[in-house]
Length: 128
Length: 137
Image (cartoon, rainbow over all chains, first blue to last red; front, side, top):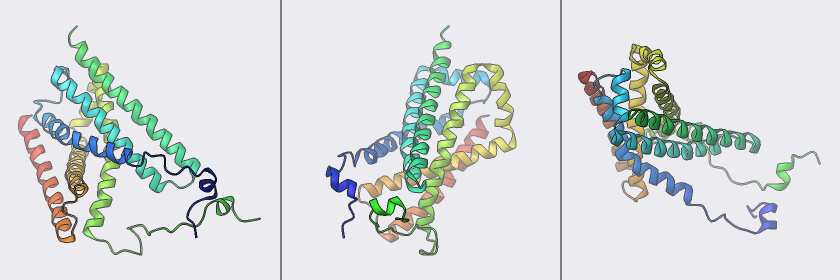
């Protein structure tokens, strides 16, 4: 008995040769997030106050702004890959799956752009 | 003719049963595995909240002062403690996963030992982070 579908037989193309890309990028972002997460958690904990001036002053510092943007980028990319696997595992039906995957991609990209833009606006606005 | 189209085009492939259900008894390692996934999903939502917080901060003091009382209220702190633990759990268990990717610690006694390690360290570091946060405010 063959596990290959008739369409697979007809096309006879084999894999898309990208089998390890998703796996690998998930690990690359995971490794990057080790120092970034420690920095993020302990920096927030050490903030003297959560009020507007204290947090704005923290985000505006160039080193913080750069690290924060890299953290947002890595975290959301890592999240996108993780959510994709969860959707592929639990959402049955091709239509619902594709809609969920597209929605997840759009939300992650919007969140990433919005987060990085917010940091840039605070940091560059502090110069004016 | 009345059979669904999928059964004509897709052969019946073997499926393994899901780890939560009648087929496997609950084990510490499988519970940690599903917790990794659940904290991951929670943190995806948390990332959106983090971005919302930053966008509000960038919009100005009026927007920020609208959400600040909720952040510092008891329920806000409770949510933040939960997110801190979820992040640190996913962090510790993620390192456990990276070790497995290197082929280390895959035997059952070690996997259970590192599993307890993840539970203890994630709770201890959450407590340390909040002790530091409350001491510096």
